[in-house]
Image (cartoon, rainbow, N blue to C red; front, side):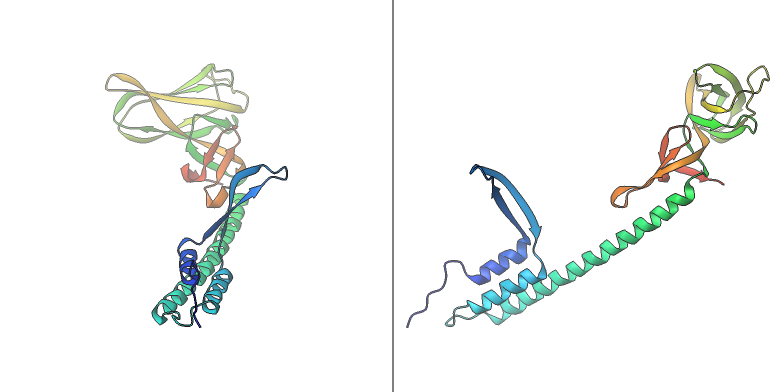
Length: 240
């Protein structure tokens, strides 16, 4: 009696499946025209186990599975199972992180944050305090205050300063001493650095009106009362 082996050995089939762990299939439309497309799905541990059992059932009795290769395939199967368990654990961690992120987001709504920006909603009866960053020593440092129409309503002189962060305050009044209406104002800081007028970065307080949660563990975005938004990572200070 002679025994013939199949054209493609089951051992090669299992090794190929373990190496690639992806299968794709193409679908045809109901009209008979073939649509070229692939659907990819991961092979699970049950699929590998079925392939392993099929390999054993169809091995050549005159040339049975080599013990070393069999043990190696069992080790591969164990690795696949461990990776799937790891994926489950990571998914659980991501879910817990998203829940924590949502809780953190709810606690930020209504609070004041300080971040780089040029506008802020100001309660003129209380005034506002911000800061300006000077990259190197300069003179004629000042902050111009502009209303919603873009008109200059006040100028805050800070004179000559060394490099660093410098605070400034605005009392909510125009240059003639009249208290202005509360609302959104724009602040533009400039200084003469090396004889050249240079625009500077200002850090202003704003109230968080809502929070957009990041996807796939991404950073949260804070939507501010003046209509702008800022990533949580770019917030300098979180106040009351």
